[in-house]
Amino acid sequence: AQSVTQLGSHVSVSEGALVLLRCNYSSSVPPYLFWYVQYPNQGLQLLLKYTSAATLVKGINGFEAEFKKSETSFHLTKPSAHMSDAAEYFCAVSDRNNDMRFGAGTRLTVKP
Amino acid sequence: NAGVTQTPKFQVLKTGQSMTLQCAQDMNHNSMYWYRQDPGMGLRLIYYSASEGTTDKGEVPNGYNVSRLNKREFSLRLESAAPSQTSVYFCAGQDGFNYGYTFGSGTRLTVV
Image (cartoon, rainbow over all chains, first blue to last red):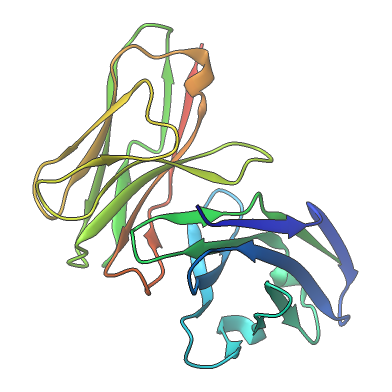
């Protein structure tokens, strides 16, 4: 079965700094990859998804992620952090069998 | 507003009590899911329904049952609640394996 590993349960950056949240996946078939964001006391919202059309995927709120097959990675980046980006971020991998697996999550803190 | 609606938002149960968590969607999703979210563990799939009239076990089905009443509604039942079922429960809908999920806002359940 496929799986994802998010490196770092907590990441702290200064406002205006680069955001880099790491995700590595394991899948025996070409994966579908997703990033979700969860604000306090809310459900998860889809940030972006990779479905093999393009390796660099742009999402909402200025986030983007690059699929690197050779590194089995799908890291999430944003050039300049904003205070409103503070949240928990989840990477997920899916195959064609309605089986989406989520990482343990990375909590992003943005310092003023 | 269109989306996935969960009720109740909060619930406290005594050990051994039963209850049903309700989920309804108005986005015409074929597939629906129930997840639980626990600190440091991400989201774990309890049950899912690939289409109306079908249900399947996920990663952590023990102690739960589900009903896909119609295309809109997918309920989760705890027959005899245990403290280990204290968690936040999320319902989600999806149109296909290459689409992301639409999540409800969650039910925070405490079993004492």
